[in-house]
Amino acid sequence: AQSVTQLGSHVSVSEGALVLLRCNYSSSVPPYLFWYVQYPNQGLQLLLKYTTGATLVKGINGFEAEFKKSETSFHLTKPSAHMSDAAEYFCAVTPRGSQGNLIFGKGTKLSVKP
Amino acid sequence: GAGVSQSPSNKVTEKGKDVELRCDPISGHTALYWYRQRLGQGLEFLIYFQGNSAPDKSGLPSDRFSAERTGESVSTLTIQRTQQEDSAVYLCASSDFPGTVNEKLFFGSGTQLSVL
Image 1 (cartoon, rainbow over the protein chains, first blue to last red):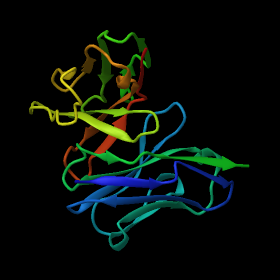
Image 2 (image 1 turned 90 degrees about the horizontal axis):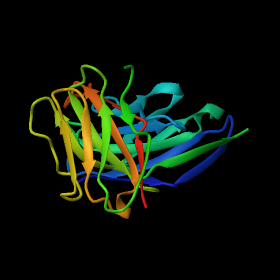
Image 3 (image 1 turned 120 degrees about the vertical axis):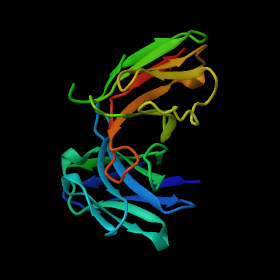
């Protein structure tokens, strides 16, 4: 069985500061891992995903995430926050082979202060 | 259209009534998913359609929930005898290259269902 834990339902950072959104997962089989973003009044969009290969994954808008098997983590980072990054971020996991049963975390709402 | 379209965007209904939610996927996408997002919760998988295969209904919470899809087009999610705990945002997603590393889900903006 798979599960996802996102630490912190709300994270607030200043513009230009580091963004760190935490995600830990549990999976009985090697997982695919995802970060989705939901901007206000929009549908979820894929930010990035890890399937196989390089454990540091780069996504859109300067975000990246690193798969750490030993820590069962897939934290999302961005070196310098921008006002437009304010959104809700969801981490998700699925067993390799299909996105059909994506298991989502509860989401982390990111606020960016000027 | 350019993206996944869901209607209505908001639905308020009385307890015990039936509701029907609609999803228009991206043209050409063979896979279609329904998720539910309750307030303060993550997305909960409901049902998955892939081409002409039998749908994966493993996430439907009760027999009051059902969904249909005609071919690779529109899907409708029906909730019979709605209960207050059905209140949530219902999200639809479609994807290309299902079941492969290249699969990517595209989500609609959701239907906010409120059961009074």
